[in-house]
Image (tube, rainbow, N blue to C red):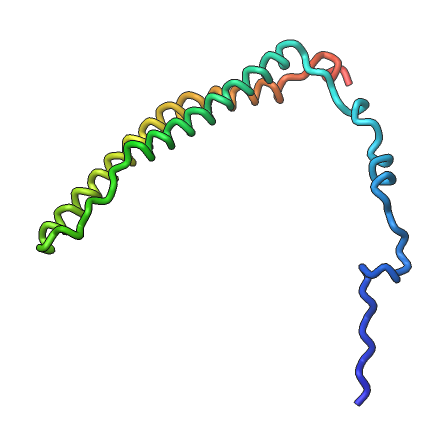
Amino acid sequence: MVPAKAKPNQNTPNSKEPEITADQILSSIGDSKEKSVDLTPIQRAGMNLIYWVGLVIVLVIIALCVDWFINAPHLPPLSGMQQSNNATIAIDTYKQLVDLAYIRFSNIFDLVVVKVLLPVFTTILGYIFGTRSEKNVDK
């Protein structure tokens, strides 16, 4: 039996396709300054504001996570408990404490980030990307 000829791999250096260099790709893109548009002063102020709001969101999330790790209840030591009834009560109490800590974390996150900061963040983003200067409207 004669083995079938394998198809040549198209990605091998022996293929007949011309090589494209990085310089050719970059030269085909053109000057990026031609495509960029200067922001109006109000849009520039909005971009600065969005950076600060985004930073506050990140800092609040970090603070909440640190608070969670500091205040989260630790698993009670079960090794000294001889009766299974005491261990069951300790585990149930631990579950309730974890639930309370989670509810506190999620309520603060919902109140501060979801209901206050994210609407401000999206409103500013909508204004920045939704507004156009008079130059762009005329075109």
